[in-house]
Each structure stands twice: as C-alpha cells, then as structure tokens.
Length: 290
Ligand SMILES: [Zn+2]
Image (cartoon, rainbow, N blue to C red; front, side, top):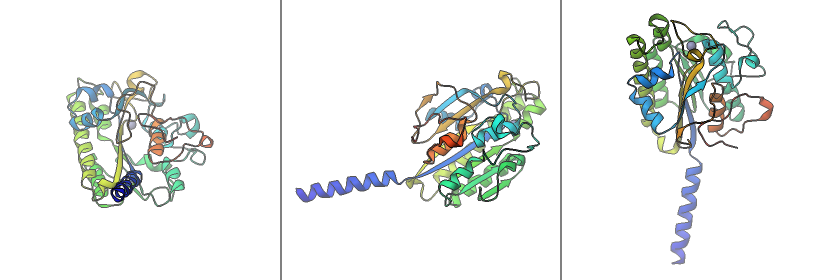
C-alpha cells in the first residue's frame, strides 16, 4: 500500500510538472479595417469559434488617429501615439528606443524564443529593429500571408507570431466599410477562412500537446464613407478576441484598448510587465501573470 502511495505521489508530481512546463505560444492575427458590427453580421465560423471559447470585446478602442500605421504601432508597442510618436503612415521618428516593438521585450526575456512577423502591409515592419524578429516577411494578397504563416506554424519552432491581413481594408476603401456593401462583407468572410487556415495549422504541430497556444484576433481601426482616420466611433471602435487555456471566458466588461494587445501577449508568454516600461496597455481577457 505504501509503495502504491509513493507511486501515486510521484505520478501526481510528474503530472503537475508536465502541466507547468507546457510551452507558452501566442498567435496574433490583425485584420486591417475590420469593423466589429460587420464581423458580427458576416458569416465567420472560425472567428465565432474563437469568440465562443474565449474572452472578447466588440466595443474596444483604437488610437484617436485611426490610421493604420498609428494603430498597428500602438498594438505592437503597448503605448498610444503620444509615446510611440508615429502619427502618420510615413512612420517618421518612431520612439522605438523607449517604446520598442514587444518582440524586443520577448527577446530580452529569452532570446531563444522565436518571433515572426508576416504581413500584407509592409510599413508595419518599420518599427522592428535588427535582432528583434527571426522572420520579417510581407506578401500580397492575404492568402499568401496566411499560407506562409500556416507553413511556419506547422513546420518551424514558433513562439510568438504576428500576422496582418490587409484585403478587408482594401475592400472598405473601394466599396465602403458597411454592412450594406456585399464586397466588404465578403472580404470579412474571406479573412475568416484564412484565420481558419492558420488556426488549423496549430493542430498539426507535432508537439502541440506540450504547448499552450493563445490566439488573439483583432483589428487596427474601423471606417466609414470609404475611409478612416478620424476620432469618431465608427473609426475608433474595434474588436478584440483572445482564446486559449488561460482565458476568462465571456465578454470583457472593462474597457479594452488596442494598446492592450502587446501587454496581454507579453503576460501570456510569462513576462512580468515592468513599471519602468511605462506601457499604457493592460492585460485583458486572460489571467494576469502577476
Ligand atoms: Zn489599417
């Protein structure tokens, strides 16, 4: 009996250790110019599944200067434009010394972790410095982005991946950011199918059982009348979805902001968010690491 007890204890401790040593992984998928109301209206089974099992807000906020460069930089640095200093899509003088891309903090934490950024709209990469990312690539159209990401997920060691899809924003500029625009709605449905391509690749990883994947799906801004950039709700209201083992399932009732994305990703990866970093974002929808 005593032997059996010892055996059970060893088994229990081993199980706990195994649970603790699961590797944390983050996949962030940003769909440029994807309005929350249209996402809710469109037929998007893959994102719906992530929402159902995850934490979400369809009333999150992006930067008041609701243009792509400003908002993506806020998402990826965890601070508003007053700090990161990107105020136009020309990315003049970004303050990346003080507010670097969150990959920088991942690498500082553990330089063995692999960071990949694969996008359609290449200017996003202007804030990535040497040594911060293992893969920095851009492709057009979105299918190529998604297929490349699926390939990386399935075949490579992957820890933190950022993906940007851009074709929904093109549809918004060309056909209007509206429920009434068939082309815009269809572009959101297409982006959803590409989310499915990338998320399903996770299941094909050979070590997936030893990994804890968190998936964030979000956007940089909304739009109206074939454009965006203003500080008005149709432009600044965005959605945020996080799915993974540590999420607090259901609607996130506290305010969610674009700057929360990087901070949440850092926390999921096991980093303690340091006060000295002076970040504006907070951990949202997932148990904080502190
Ligand atoms: Zn954009």
